[in-house]
Image 1 (cartoon, one colour):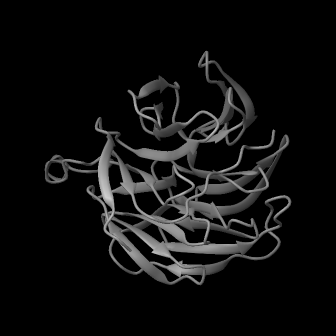
Image 2 (cartoon, one colour):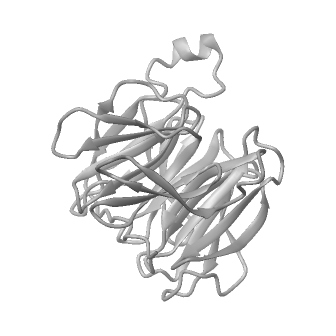
Length: 291
C-alpha cells in the first residue's frame, strides 16, 4: 500500500469524535461529538463546517433522503429535517434507561440500520445491538460492554460487530434481503496487540478497515481475518473511519481526547481532530435507511 496523504479536515477537537459518514445525495461529510451532543457537517467540495447542537448524546446517522436524516441518540432514533434542524422522535431505544447511550451504528445493504448501545460509563454488559427497518425494531445481541465495528460485506451476507472491552470482532452470516442474522456469531479477529478495537467500515473488496483506539492506527483485515495493512494516524485515539469516495479508499477519521489526562493531551496535540486520509482503493457508501 502506498503511503497515504493525511490532512486535517476539521481542526477543532471533539472530546469523543464518532460516527463519521458521507452522503452522496448532498455531497456532505458528517460526524459527531458524542459527549457534547453535536452533529458536524462539512461539504466534500470544501467550505466551512456547520455545527448542530442536538440537546442530547448522539453518535451515528443514517441517510433517509436528500432532506432527512435518522440520528441515533441516547434515547432512540430521531428524524432530523436538514433544512430546519427540527428533530422528531421516530423510534425509542432504551429511552427509559438513563445508564446507556447509542454508540456505533451503520446501515446494511438491505437498508436496515444496526444500532449499538453501551453504558455511559462503559458498564460491563450494559450494551446491545438492535436492528431497525420499516418501522420494526429487533434486539439482535445483548451483554456487550462497548459496541463497535458494526459493518457489512458488500453483498450483505456477512455482518461484523465488536466488543471493545473484549477486543474481539465477530462475524455472523446475514440474510442479504433483510439484514437479519441467519446464524451464530463466530470470532473474526481477536486483537492481542496494544490498543482497542473501535469503529470499522468494509470496502468494495470485502476488506475491513478498523480504527485501533490507543494504538494510533487504522488496521485493514482481509475477509478471512488476516491483518494485511496498517496506517499510522496523527492522533492516539482514532475512533471510526468512513469512506467518502467510491473511486478510492479515501477516508474521514474521527479521533478523541476522551479520558486523557492533561499531560496526555499535551503529548497528543491532534487528539480530537478530524482527519482525511487519501489513498488508492475501492470505497463504498452506506445506502439510505428504509423507513
